[in-house]
Length: 290
Image (cartoon, rainbow, N blue to C red; front, side):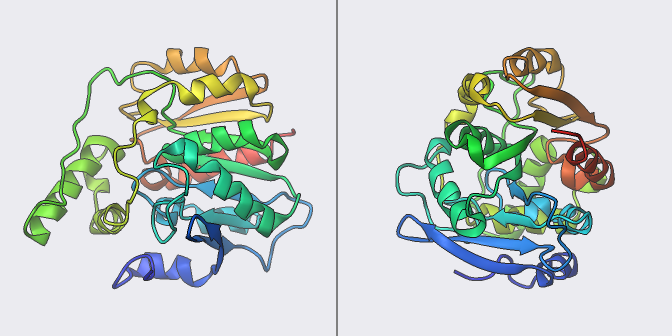
């Protein structure tokens, strides 16, 4: 497959150039990983693994990777199976088919070393299921705007289809709408860069018809997650707005739930829209004692 984005924007190119690209098996193809911070990593700190959201790729973490790596962490980010440059998983096209190839890849890259794991949205559900199935793999678990709690938005949002549209301008307008409807709160945050990332990621989403995010699959896993657990969400995230108390009640079923924290002035894609506040919050969590 080709590189992540044709005609790579400068901000993406800068981050990408500092990474090493590696491959592990996935289905009938490969799982693509990027690794940052290998040269300056503190061997006393666990590796940090990041899982992106649905219709995404490693670029969901574009504005977080270098600050997190600069903290002394080795940061590993896959394109999840069926997204970005990675092959489809072999046993399905929803979140329950994704943890096994990821764990197999982590076993190749980390051996038995446990990591800190952060997952955004679909990647948060993936991270929770991975910890449930492979509890020795993860030290801290950070969920970001994760669905899978069986809690429906108070105000439903509708995303526009774009694949059928005849022109690039029409497709770009649909991506702009979808960013506004779900991902970003401030219209000023819907920059050309955000639209280009959204468009490049969406066209490589090969996991259609995902349904489990509308169920309580993650909530059901929480009692079996024994890692210290944190959840971050954007103040204006449509999944969470007006219903934070319901999420908090569900999170209390996790044996080592630590904190539910809000990122102000952000939508679902909080780590992009308010990256400085988000990075500071994550670094604070990573410095918490286990």
